[in-house]
Length: 422
Image (tube, rainbow, N blue to C red; front, side, top):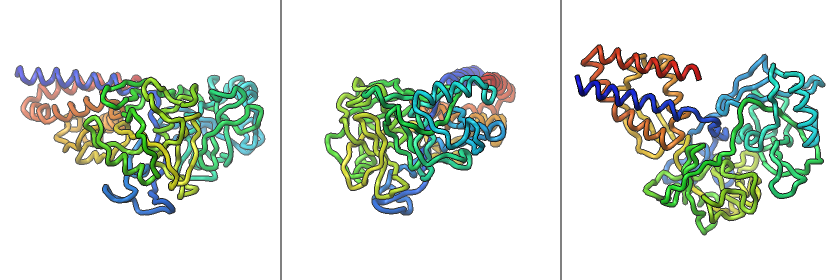
């Protein structure tokens, strides 16, 4: 019985510790791109080793997901947790045709929403450039957004709250024709969409691993620290990352445009990145794995001089910074579990599924937390691995001892209850 008590203690400590890393303030949402392309057109997605393998659509991230609130006047982003104002066509303050100068967008429009307690809230604000960029759906254009969840969106530019780091007279725009991110004079007029509930970014917590890699603890992504001195065409950039072996890892890839933009520090320029952790970053173009769906001969890049996000011809040359881990990676939860940064491991009998049932609410909650929170940090990935290493022994002990099984269930019930309160 002593061995079973030790197993019980280990499992409970592991299960409880996992809840400490479940809270991710703002996971990076997927770009929405589901199609694959060559240098000119859509293609069947290639297999490993084939040309153009490793592009955006081939990695599973946090898919964009939205919930309509209050009859559609607001929309919740189920990935980031942000709540957005929806636009109307009724000549009200929410009308899709209303435009503002940058300061008026805050002093007039946002102030009016808060004074009126729109949606019963008074904490509305202009979104940051990163938050606004995350609404872009890279599979769509004119407008480049999910129009079912966000009807009445203009195929035009919307203000962010983020000022340019250089010229004091400018602020950042996101263009919803296809998804460009660029600066614009504050005295110009643009459309506005309000947001509330928390904040996404800046994603500025880094750890230098001392092996040529840097981990962002906000996103769970591990980055190649040094920029490769060569520049590449887009196809070669994909190949370079897929074939890279660095710090003992061989699962590197070209980042999608949301991941790459998460490195931008919009309070700096020339380069617009934390140079303490990324000291030789070029103030130039870096390729993402995301094709410009409006112009398949081009792919999205991030300019690390100032933070612009634009499409560029795939035959042009750009710099490359590889990424791994984080929330992207294939997984088949029915038979295997892919732990970012490890090999694919066959899942042994799962104690929580045995206790609650494979399709129970409890099992679904834990699977959701595993795939959308734990897997996003190196610490969480290690906890997942340990869970599956211990699971066979725990499952066997439950088969042999009903009292052990009941005690384990009582412990997990307590942890699940605490999760439900958060």
